[in-house]
Length: 319
Image 1 (cartoon, rainbow, N blue to C red):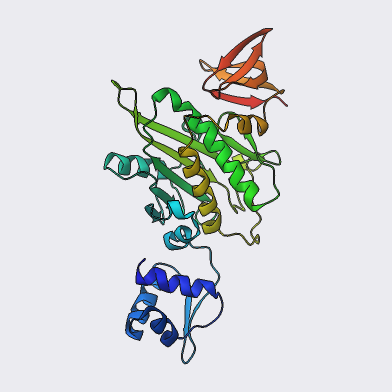
Image 2 (image 1 turned 90 degrees about the vertical axis):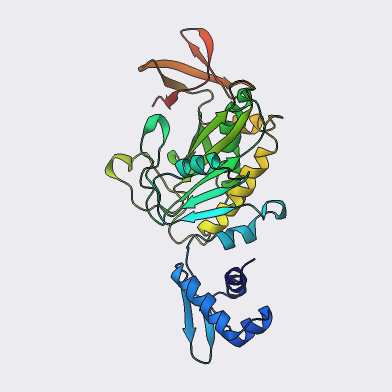
C-alpha cells in the first residue's frame, strides 16, 4: 500500500474530523513533509481534503471513485487485483479489451466516472453521465470452453442483482438476456465479450461490463419513460462501496462458471417468464410467450403453439 493510500485510509476512518499531520506522520513513521506532499497529491487526484493551521487534515464527504477505497472493501482474496480509474473514457469494455490484449492479468477492473461512447444492446448508446453511475469492466482469464461463455451473461446478471440486494431491500429483475430492471424501469445492463482460441475452443479472455444508473437524476427525453435510477441522490451509499460489492460478486462467479451454479437464481429473478413478449429475429418482431429459461440461459418461448429456444437476440414485454 502506498503512502497516499495509507493516509487516505487514516482520514477515511474519521471523515469530517481533523487529524494532525504530526499524528499521521507518527502513525506511518514518515516526515510531516512527506504527509503534506501525499495530501497535495490526493487533492490533485480530486479528493476533498481540507487543511487547517494547528488542526491538520480532514477528508470531506465525496463520492469520488477511488481504487484505494474500493480495494480496501474487497474480500481479502481479491484485494491484490489491479483497479484502474478513469475520469472519462469512451467505453470501459473497449479499454478492457485493449488491456486484455496487452496481457492484463485476471481480475483487472476498469472503472470510469463517465463514458462518452458506452454501448448497450444492438449497438445502442448506454447513457453514462459523469459522476452519476457505476460503469466498470472486469477481465477474466478463466480457461473455460467457448460453449460455456453464454453462461457468463446470466451469471453476471445474478451477480448484479445480488449486489443490489446486499445493500438495499430492493428486488431487481432481469429482462432476458442482460437488462436489469427495478420498479418497471431499466437501471442497468451487462455486456460480455470473449476472445477464444479457434483450434482449442478455449477462451483466452472474457470481458464483463456492467453499467448501473446509480444515482442518475436526469435522463435524455427519449429515455425518461424507460430508464430509472437505483438510488435517490441523497442515499448514503457511495459508488466506491457499491462497486466493491459488485466486484466481489463478479469475481466470485468467475470461479464457478463451469458448474453453472447460478441458473436457478437467474430464473427466480426473471422479468419475462410467463409473459407475452415480442422478440427480434432477422430484423422482424415476432410475438410469443416466454415459458422458461433452459440450463444454458436460453429463453424457451412458445410461438403459435410450438416451442423453441432463443439463444440470443432482444425481447420486449407486451403491454
